[in-house]
Image (tube, rainbow, N blue to C red; front, side):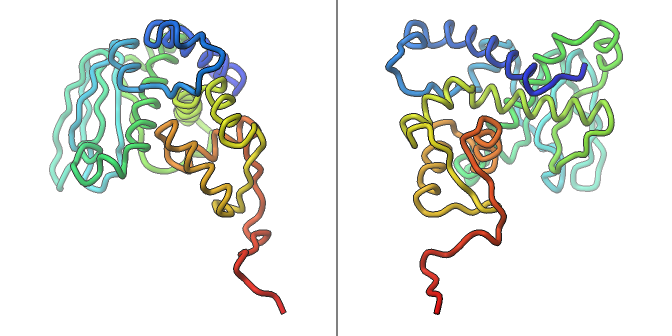
Length: 243
């Protein structure tokens, strides 16, 4: 199943609307309310009935998480030795580093996005055709560090899970509300990945609302027209004095 950005946004809207009604009740319908960030842990456990646990998934931290659609086994190599992780239907396993005391705050955004990514895999699997379901039944979905060129079905699966995961964590309707309060719905501007101080404060406020990293926030805001991206060389240090 290959979906467009528009298709994925429509799926996210339907899923989040249903979840918000069950989780937030009448608050979700209040037109004057502030943005409601998605409580992704409750979304995973209460709404999708996923069982989330933590294990060390790699020696170098390259594997963030994995999920399974049926009972299966996944082979990993940790500290030079091979071992098996046994996954039951609807299990999600995230890397143990996310819950180490020194990382709980530092990696909060990455943990939330990884869990949203695995939730997205489960949602997309349920929407897939029966023959595709059979083909990937025994293969766990693995989220690794690094970007992909969209060449294979697996590449598309990962792009779709990233895109849907972002739309679940940062639903368009909630982004609209947040950006109204943060910047009167005007776009921010970044130069490569740098912001002037005023916009840096605003994107940090956005990250605080939704519990995401600055990179995830910037990508989502750009998708929704709330961020203008310019070239690095166009940035001018406001403290730099020109002769």
